[in-house]
Length: 564
Image 1 (cartoon, rainbow, N blue to C red):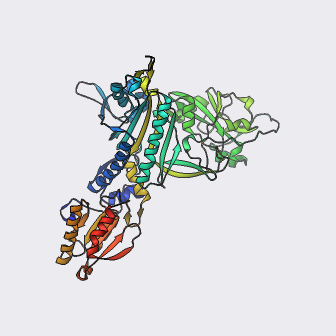
Image 2: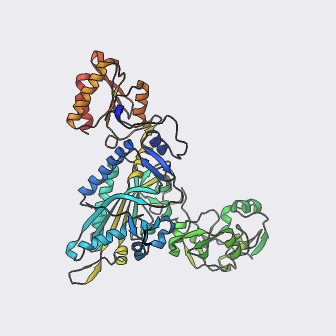
Image 3: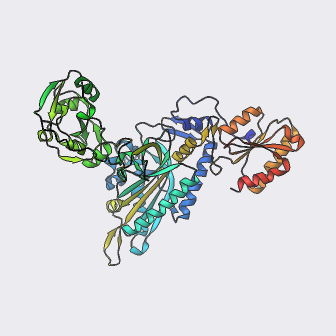
């Protein structure tokens, strides 16, 4: 591609409304442009990178026996009502009506449609197994889009679904996709970890995430300093290390704690440690108020709490709801005498003579014990902390930030039962199909690679993802010899099927060099003053190493670059 007659631009200044290094660089490199919050244009250079990522994904999916199809994005709402997920998605789903007032949604995910498609060739046990996938746009009305392409409202996703006659078949299909995903993310050049994760709205038997390690990652990837334990923070067990308090139980006493509504304020007021307190949090779970009780130095894990209650929506109660339920403002709730279901973290069971809110403004109760209230359930409800003991080996947990770029789900029979996807077994009995689901966010991959592969000068794309592997830069368009040699090399590349970028603009050499660095071209061949003596300059973007090379050796250099 010749830049002189192509659509190409870069920005010298940082983007004002981007909140991550990767999104800022992608915008400056002219690869993406924000249209609205959470909605981006993919510009020509960015489209080439995205196409290369798509090629890697499609290549491995095809090699692992998956067949590609394409589902509609506009879907009758009844499809999600039938599966029971319309309510679960709630306002995250874009909804509209056609001219006949029929309700439609823009597909946030396609499990239901794949189950419907699978029914066309899933009548008998002899029809299995098979694997279907698509690469298509999804839509989700995110409350808070951020970090450029990481959390958006419209995004391209590869989603695949396997169909098997039994759980053993699903296990085989799952491991086949596991292998495909490892190869995909290795080929993308990502530093990633595979972690156990919450099944969330997808449901099912098992979920694992591919987390690209990143400073801007929204997820906490939990590891161990002694073993290979890896998990998402949301589901990591807090190992119960507290020992029973064998001190005698004291008489409960109400104390005056003016304007001390937080653990820190009450701790300072009473001269106690946060671990001496037990806090009570009031939540609204699907329209019903409930209370969670946990140690004062721990945070509630809302994922664990939501799964315990099987809640679709779990939100902190409003100040008005707290006041109505407890008789006090926020900060003074406690489990004693509370007329709400109480769910208690298991670490509280070891405590004696602890301090709680008195359900009265500016008052707390001290010397509270388990006999003073009755929890509905005692369970692991706390958020894990860095340094906690590893549930697997007893080592200490470590934290890293990660971007979820892919996921694997063992769905089991959840969707096949909901969508009546059944087959006849060897005994002519109807059985539900066993399904697996496997997703990759292509634009997230693009952002994650940009986040991991850049320096102060710009992007550093791996060879197989770069918009062009090599750029030919003419230092002076006024020098006929430079132009002639560049054109000869460009024509050689074309004859071999190599897509190279020819910078034949009338810009200064410094501008051209900076642009090639910014957009992340891995290999740069500069045709400048040295051409007069039969020499050119070769620069590797990855390390900036410069090498003088004879003009007659340039075709062989291109052969080497494009042979990788």
